[in-house]
Amino acid sequence: MVKSRHPSKIKPRVSIHEGPPTILIASRSRRVLRRWHQAVADKFVVGEVKHWTVLSRRVASVKPGVLLLDTALPGYEGPPSLRALQRVSRQTNIVLLTDAPDKEDAIAALRVGARGFCRRLVARSLMLRVAEKVREGEIWITRTLVSRLLDEAMATRRKSSGVRPDLQQLTRRERQIALLVSEGYANRAIASGLKTAEKTVKGHLTRMFRKLGIPNRLHLALLVARRRRWPERPATT
Image (cartoon, rainbow, N blue to C red):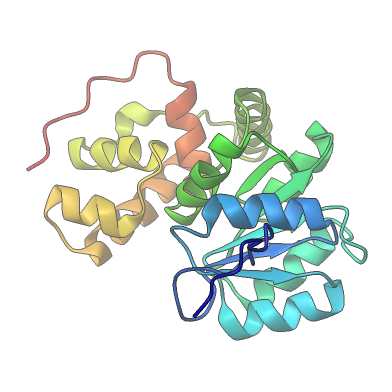
């Protein structure tokens, strides 16, 4: 067989892995699709969607671990669109991609469950990290947004209950779990590290939310992140 002396310079964007996509990219921009696909395809099965009318059905059918959603996608309408996607796949972590991140838009999206907010063409060296961290349960936002979210959450709680959350009321084990949550560990990883059952970790989290008067792990992570003198992490047992 004679090999061509002029092989095509265009490489198809095909993942080396098989099976349903664990990362789904939704954008009408060829450049955005190409850059993100090339950045994550070596580690994940990747799918692409170019139309909003197709996106909801695709998310419902494959339930990807991460959805990289371009806010410029025609049909995307902010929080209502995010709620619609969450109704068909609660386990999909959504990262919004935009050219000019707006604090108000980011906070509105995070309030309804988005897990990240970053520039559409963030440095390629960060693209894989974004996908990995969000898939593992972390939240990809700026420090400024962390402070803003916590201030709002605490203001809302004080208004409703008049009580400021006190992390010192947590038990030693609860403080261990809270610290690991703030570092982005998912329940399964926390359970493995502490040599306990995942359902035990979930039970601790439920009690912590009740003690602190907060709705979810995002608020717990924000509380720990803002604490200036958090004690050194206790040794796991």
